[in-house]
Length: 277
Length: 188
Image 1 (tube, each protein chain N blue to C red):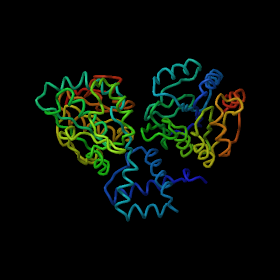
Image 2 (spheres, chains in turn red, orange; image 1 turned 180 degrees about the vertical axis):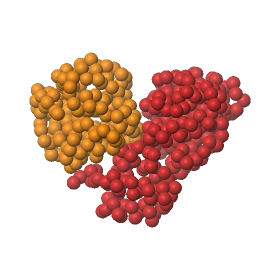
Image 3 (cartoon, one colour; image 1 turned 30 degrees about the vertical axis):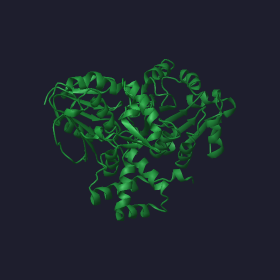
Image 4 (cartoon, each protein chain N blue to C red; image 1 turned 90 degrees about the horizontal axis):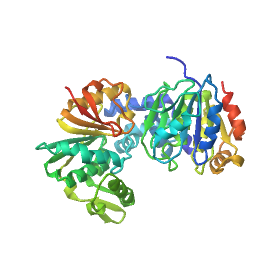
């Protein structure tokens, strides 16, 4: 049988998820089973374990392997100015409202390696708001946060990011924001000065501040309904009155219990405003 | 919980839209399976594709949304820029992870996920295309007892994708367009 097709049984996946919860406190039980299973299967195949028992033993006995596995289970695909129109709405409609506040507090929940966080910092910088902003960027996963803190991204992606930036209404020279060094682009320290990167687990951790804008794109799609509801309440509790919440292109408040607390602000771009507490 | 319906998944890339436009008008209102269509395309307007296909059939056609539950007689279109997975209870999950064979949605991803859940109650057909996507997925479908078919490369607009599958995995049937229409139409 081909490598890519080695099957983990559903029971194996449940055993492993239980290990992660019991031993390490990571709770994936309310995640999309199909997605977690697919990602575990990929690791299981790629690392060529002879049996599930050996895979399980490695996870239980090797903390470094656990860090790697956590990075593999959670989806960390992101880009700068992804969905340019979304960033255009932020630039032209959302941030001008926030500009009236003395201090702007933004939370990127599930920020992964930070591409969208740096995109936000660029927007704030160009609107001359960065100096009075604080961006909290959180993720469950320490190793992606470590990458995010560095602000170093593969140079090969810069052409795409530059196109996204222009399509989102950016008018500067995008390459002015980074220094190219061999295969990497290091973003200027100035952008990072107002960003606080920290570990936060949406499943188990509580609200830690009040924000005017929360961005959480393509995270909720991996959660079941109950967990989606729970996290949306966490966001609602963490938003000021009339604060903005932005979700991913295929995420919705329909059929959730927070729906009455929000009104649509930009339908297609999935931005809502909080209207009651 | 009601039992899962049987499921047909059709995967296509370059040159496959025309096959669908010929197939869909032939399906009768009582056609009893659930259908998922995974098409490679640019990340443009999903609504247009759904409207185009919807106009060709009496069956309901909808953009697949997360948590939708697969319903018999309904056609679901995998959205652009997301993979489409199926949960054990027959509900849908969208996934924004890495492209597979330069593609998101990837046919492999949906074939494999469907195979895990539907086993013998699954039919998968791979259409025209210039990509290797779909072959690994058909292998998984075969391994888990499902039915595999490809469009006959001889009359596919782009032969590479179905030919690659024929050469690398066990394929139950090779169908020209006329046979393909008859086969799908008669599924029960």
